[in-house]
Image 1 (cartoon, chains in turn red, orange):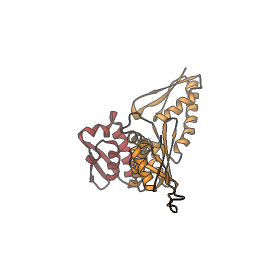
Image 2 (cartoon, chains in turn cyan, orange):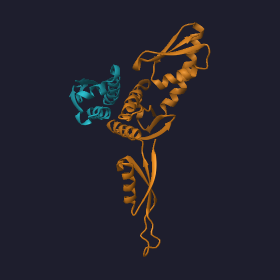
Image 3 (cartoon, chains in turn yellow, orange):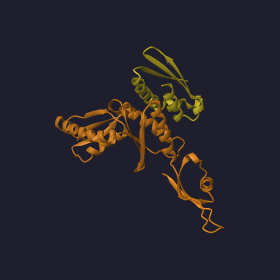
Image 4 (cartoon, rainbow over the protein chains, first blue to last red):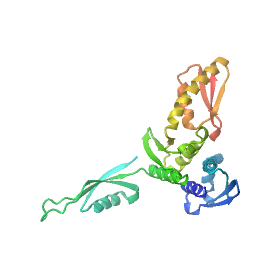
Length: 76
Length: 205
């Protein structure tokens, strides 16, 4: 899951080397915290949060496959 | 769009390098087709240079394909990825087993993937080329369903004399609704709302 979010974020930003995802695992759910370069924050959020929403949708699909719930937080 | 050039050299490697230098692209951005192998010949007779055809893949296609491959890997899925350019749009279709998870409910995951893919593919390009992602022809099938839905709801709008709002759709789905009903003089279709909440409203005229 962590790798999936990293892959997606890296494809969107200008500084892929600065993409960091930390995973906080719970029993049935997990939180993924996405950190990107300050100038790239807009590129993973998008206009009216559209990109963030799409990222969450994809992560949710991946979590469902593993029978889990996942939340994505974007740190800025 | 792909670019194609041909080059010659004493060896295949040399021919490829000549072409790469000329185009200033790197080896992993191109596909090489060998047109003729080089031949040493005897005492300078019958000597032949190597000839290659270099296909420079469209950067958008390369970026999009790479991303799709990585996504599939992260989902532990395998699929064939095909791409074709139609009317200024890049269409990608994936075929494989267990890809339903990438479609999601009412195609929500597929739309999210398409959205991200479109942005990633066009990154750094001056002009934006729309990207359409399909999985096992899901969009093609839904196109038929959407047309039927549009016709049924237009009928309802006319009979009941009230505007009918459809569920939120992506640009390609909305386009199908607009096009289907453009020939029906009894109704008018207008898109309302922002982003992923944007939907078509069918108004009786």
